Image (cartoon, rainbow, N blue to C red; front, side, top):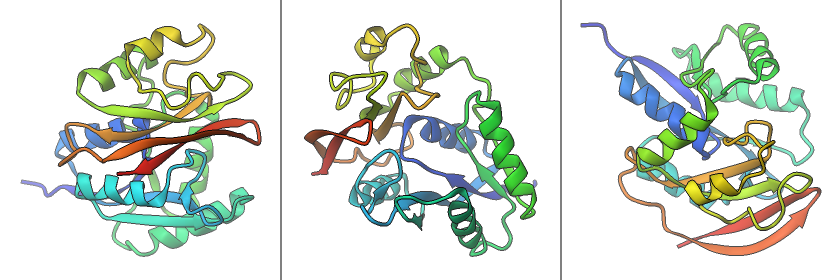
Length: 221
């Protein structure tokens, strides 16, 4: 019997990367060596999602998968991001594949593939081209739970940030908003699910607007 292939997972802590991880785990063809998470060094939080490092660490511990933070500056260029990511991957010389939770944005996938191939790496996309309405409903049906940590203020107001991903949230979304927020309308933090050993404890903190985004500070415990 062929042994499982070891891979890395590009991990945002949100629902898309979480369900991509789950699908990879269910396939039994792969073994996860680590979760690669981009951390904005200036804030010590997950880039874009705004989630504190402590919660990310608790999430990885519950998933029982090693965490490998990839630190970048707050105004990082693509070059800085790519350099840091390649350096992180160099710590796993026998691994040539990274799992991503991309759903349908062809330009993003093409960017990843073009970048990866230059470094003898490959992308795995287990949820690529899933219908996003069905995808988020499957996420909920499987028992995953997530809170909205960030919204694009031009598209979704403060009434959406800090809410749980559930049927009520989905029904309240404007019709033009992708139900998975694939265009960057919103970002999430997953705190419970079938591949979690235990729920991640959190409480809702302050809601603020910064640089065109609404953020809900999710506090550990």
